[in-house]
Length: 166
Ligand SMILES: [Zn+2]
Image (cartoon, rainbow, N blue to C red):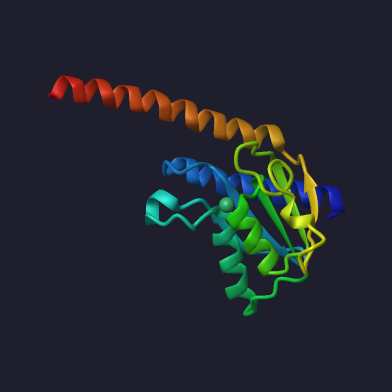
């Protein structure tokens, strides 16, 4: 595989993870960690499922990659994620020494890579991460938009049914 088709393939895998989250009613964000051309960790958001605020897609994928490689250092690894990582996930990326991050769509309200903060490229920190953004941005954002649109609709229905039950 050439570099471009490799990037496309791995981002599609991250999108697949996001779709898995969608199916179980989680905010649809997915991620994969790639080491020497192979996926060593994959994850999607599991916050509701596990009632745990820390299990974002990136964290789940990083944890699995650390187990697979039997190391907390993911130096030669790339992370692909559908939405711009938040502060917590940026911290996990820096702490695991991931070399490069590809993300799809920006998150203007929580993004800590480009939108609100630029943590991954902050020269004051002891580790900097290469960042590539915009891969499958539209697909990634559409998945989120559809999810929140459906969630809003569902809440309206719940309100109505509650009203009729009382
Ligand atoms: Zn996060």
